[in-house]
Length: 105
Image 1 (tube, one colour):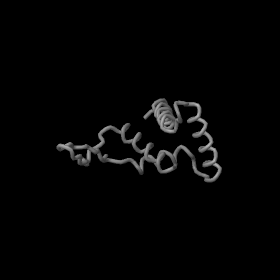
Image 2 (tube, one colour):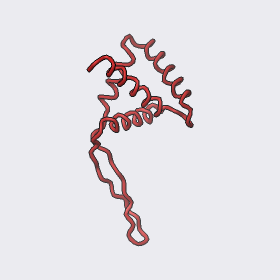
Image 3 (cartoon, rainbow, N blue to C red):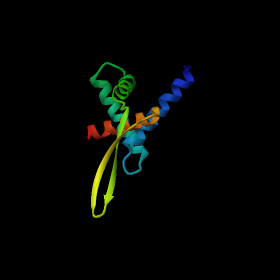
Image 4 (spheres, helix red, strand yellow):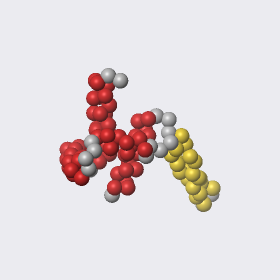
């Protein structure tokens, strides 16, 4: 991988994180939250923030996703849970970021 591709991947990852953190459509607010978190995290540990975030995403990427379907039989409703395989890496990263956001709140 060349340095240009690495920089492009870092920008894409940063944008994905900001899009997940974004509150009520304000991208600037998401960027502020990410910057404050990065600074406080960098002060508390001696390791690089970017490497730690990448390791966290890699270690918590899900392979399967559970889909719920509601089945209607007359007046009754029943839920059917079906596991599905997540094929694309970008979808795995987005589901991981959403999961990390839910856990952090």
